[in-house]
Amino acid sequence: MHMTPSPPLMGGVSLWGLDCYPAYYGVTENPNRVGIYKPIPRSGATRPKGRGLTIMSLDVVSLGELLVEFIRRERDVMHTVPGDYVGPFPSGAPAITIDSCARLGLRSGFIGVIGADGFGEMLVMRLKSDGVDTSRIRVNEGSATAMAFVAYRSDGSRRFVFTLKSSASVRLSPVDVDPEYVAKARVLHISGSTMYMSRSSREACMRAVEVVKGSNTIITLALISGWSWSPWRGLGK
Image (cartoon, rainbow, N blue to C red; front, side, top):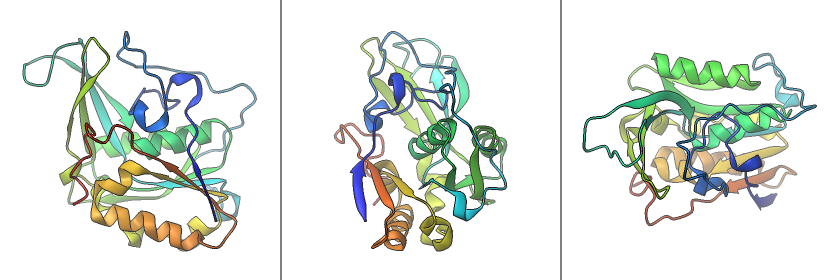
């Protein structure tokens, strides 16, 4: 079993269309832009379609939170006052990573939980369109897809409001981890944010690690930077 830190995303921009949680990926944020991007896939990358992938063919598997993000249209307008937001944009740290892998031509699969709503449908549609296998994304009828609201200050810092604690994402559990699905991947990617999201999501991550323990599977871990300000703090109790 190999464990290596996750590399930063290319060009300082999330390839999933949104510069999201840059501290988690070593991405340098541009403080002069709110961060809605439409990057072009790297030349020569061949993206597989997001359905019909066999377990044997997967290069990378990840698991964790899936959420939509809304961003204040203007800077220095915090959540305490009325104002306009733009969105929804697909988001979630591990989902951004797995989508980036697919867009770079790697056969990629994701394990997660969404609500039975339009936001969840949008997330699955985006992953599929970029080539991610979504067959292990479960729909939870009793909770909504997670949301994040972000306000930017002029200095580039941000303030978050999350609905994660009551969302479908925190319902991720070891039961969602199909051992055969995980064991056949060359790389298992885990985000530190998922480890702190809920007890069951942390147990799901540990279950995935146990599955590949002793094999040649590479484990990548995206650490959480700036824990003192992290919006995830306290969620995993």
